[in-house]
Length: 430
Image (tube, rainbow, N blue to C red):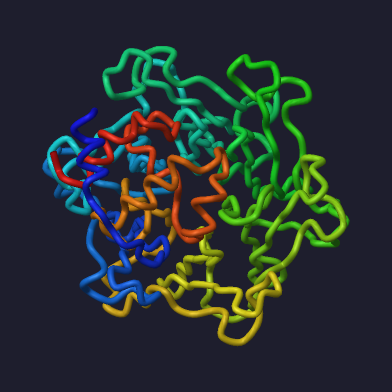
């Protein structure tokens, strides 16, 4: 370790201005592919074709089956990409081992779980992916005629690189909450906050649309025991918002106890921010739900939302096959003023056939978020390691658009001196 510490200390840098999180993966079920869009020049827009390339498809050197109908996407802060495919009936894992910007090379992709898994877990319609503070993978399954509504917990207990063995997929939220089989719920995206509380976007009718909160209070490894599942937001909210169908749920990267969801109500698409202002574990109180953007325009079908550390919000539009970016330029907490919506990815060449799920793809070690790992990341790396967990206010005061967890270079979920060696490896390549 001493050699790397000395090497780190020996490099002097001038802190560069922070750019912003700017690399993302998009699921494309038309082209049977996954794409990367990367704003390399930090101009706030994806230039084509140079800032667009394939992340994964059937041409991969690992021989992994190509995607046919990707229905969920999640990316862990250490770069593990998880995708669920409804037609393949499988959960995929990806890692860009050679840092060339894709998962097309040998050993970079694999089926982590499929219908043959030894746990007998149904993966018939994976609709959401999330990770807890230890990096454990959770997958939501929307019930079908051949599978139940359930949120699965996936653990590689024997270290063989998959979750195919008996007992490696267990219910985290199951029949005690959803009821047996394919019941009245329509579970979609899930999210887990820094306190390991899980949230679920439910899109069912009959008064069940909304967001539900799950917390494993007794530590038994699941969150559907009495008192562990509660309503976070539904149509009984005191803000007066009628909750309807929608898929997306995204934690607000800037505001505490906040999240975004999308819904369509009377032909009007709405982006809603929920905030638990009074700390009572729901967003049902007056002014805790706010419509931050709405439009009734034709040929606009919002599917997913991504919240960034600099306050911007990205929205995928599968009718126009575009990605929009929203910026609160006047500070009113909404994105309704002129100029606050812009096109982030035009897809002008129609290379991407389907614009649905989208997730931030971090660059491990890129602590100033300029899109590369180099000497300019040393100062922000040190600042992240010396900031106060779990919110790292000292780091974010200087780099508000970046991600302190990218300093977790050894992937153990903790920022400390043990990250120095692997960070220097990222920096120097050895």
